[in-house]
Image (cartoon, rainbow, N blue to C red; front, side, top):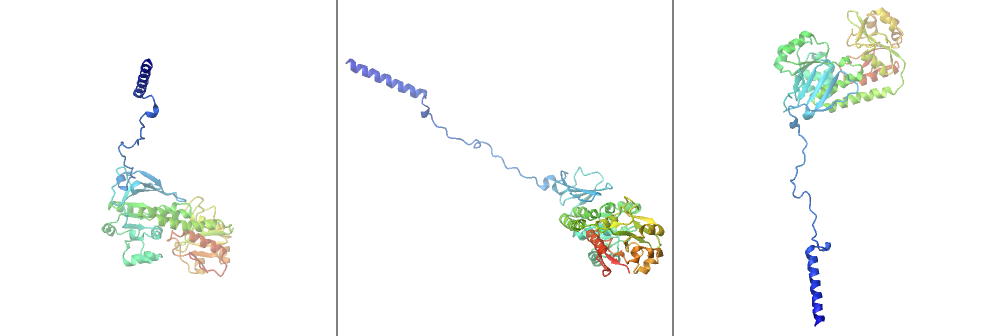
Amino acid sequence: MKRKLLSLTLCAILLLSVLAGCGNGADPTDAPTEEPTDAHTDAPTEEPTQAPTEESFDGKLVFDRSMELSYAKCFTVDYYKGGYKLATISDGTKLLVVPEGMTVPADAPEGAIVLQAPVKNILISSAPVISLINAVGALGTVSLTTNDVDTWYIDEVKDALTDGSLTYIGEYDAPDYEKITASGCTLAIYSAMLTEDVEAQLTSIGVPVMVDRSSEEEHPLARVEWAKLYAALLGAEDKAQEVFSAQESIINELAALESTGKTVAVFYITSSGSLYARNAGDYMAKMVELAGGVYALPDVGVGKSGTAKMDLEAFYEKAADADYIIYIWSTGGKPGTMEELLARGEILAETKAVKEGNVWCTTPDFFQIQSTIGGMVSDIHEMLLADERVDNLTYLFRLK
């Protein structure tokens, strides 16, 4: 009986111990397992960030980048978000191109010429400028010019004047203002020959004026690079880069060659008998150097572009021993033979270049086409290497 009672007591104690352990959760293996949860399951879903559209920059000037230029120093072009473009000329003129369908920014530079894209119906009084615009395929944006059809050597321009898509409106210093007003002209681009009275008159009829400053550039290729400016205004940047790169490649190939050491003088004589030689700082002197020659008048107009008026005798003293003469046929009197040239200055017969038959003239389109300066430099190089059998190059011809 005692043994049975002892057994029952031990069983009771054991049962109580088990129940106590279960109540305290002492065994970690019996703890309920937590399933992993996604931290973002219950969080609000965020929409992906969308890139701003062009319209979101409407009426704002938010800077994006500047045009890369290799040689040109007389203009810059800045690009802004949304397609706005701001061109700045060295004389302080600013031109703001407003994309089609966009509004003029409230913070547009004060005094800027505002052009609504697509820019068209332009008046141009500069043949080189039209040549650049034609080269980038935007001749259709030009509607007025101060050069008549018989003065042109660019076929596309002559055709446009003939079919009426381009209109002659009188000389650069006396244009037909009534025609300009009736045309709805949006911009007039002149060379540095623009007179104050013409500018004032154009402004008074509501036509903004820009002066092309490419003639002030130091490097010949900088003049070609002005194609990028006009292309930016007219939306043809890719073509402008193609035009520029083609001319730059020609110059780079010539730069890899050794100098010929041959000297070249560049000048012309007006119909009234005045002689003008290209300054040593002029782009044509630089073209001679790029072609592998040496400019024969290194102390004339040092650091200056353009020409210097000289006495015939003073020119002779400096150019008598020049290996070559390049006569600017289109600007000066237009001799067809050596005899006609010497009639303007008999003393020239004593120069080395005349005696050896190395007098070359620029072709009529030499100063009209600015987009092919690399080709012109290449012609000067060919002239320096030509023998007596070569009389005609693309931009130069031998005077006999």
